[in-house]
Image (tube, rainbow, N blue to C red):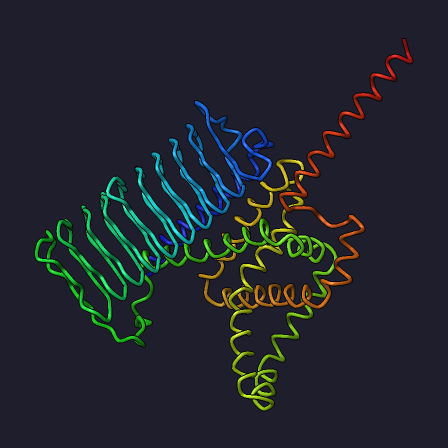
Length: 430
């Protein structure tokens, strides 16, 4: 167990170090040549310069050659080119038609892989499809509601999911913790199959697969504490948490203009007040639930679900708020949107890593809960008056796409004005 845990900590620390070093080593990345007026990004051409490695937009289509690690964030991402490095993609829909000469890390609602990944696949999503034309040359680590594998996995498959359907080839072992594992006719599995499920695996007569080792569990049964988590389960947990945080970041950044603007104002001016509100809410929650049920039982039920939803959203929202504090360190190194993306990656990685350290994890999650809940409550209480007035003062940090475009256009106007003044000055001297 200790060996597995130490390996997992090493991998998580490496991810954090790579993220931080990439952030500080980045130069100004200008993606304006690829953007249209609607915020869509279309990347075409022979080769993309290595200085352009992070792209964010509404819909992103990449059909070029990338010679470095690349980051994509948006609503719909289509990767048609060749990527000589690892690829990180967070979106509603991610489609891979090209070739990734590295690892693929993706978090989305729907992931469709039609191309080739020469190393490992790490995916956290609702629906995952590895089509018949797809090849994952090494291991696949999957966390999803539904998994459909028609293509080839070169080595091992580890999946925590609702339903896993295998029609393709797995050239290694299969470890699943699922509701239902189905192996259809034509499927080939070379290594052993270990299935942890309440339901027996369905294996078609025409499938080329060994006997399934079935660990039957009840719906309520959990893993025994003395066994400890496996490396696969830890990695799946990391992918799921990171994907959830990035999805919330995408929603706040691209789809909720006022909410995003309020985030900057609160992080800059009212962080202590929001912390106080969050801490107060934490202590009065039990009393609030009791009073709600006393007043009216259905109201108490609704209040319970509301508090649960607030608790789930607290961590990703807190990560977004804290990233606003970190973003100022990248002001002179990269564009606002890119610095926002890098900042959320660093905060998310740090929070997830600290969450696996005993005792510290409780403190971290409590702090994130207080920050996230405090921010949401502060936003609701003051969004219609106080925060709106402060945003109108122009002191808030602008991070929305439209606002960034306005900033860039304003910069161009200022530069043009400066050039005109310079020319007038030269004419006067002459």
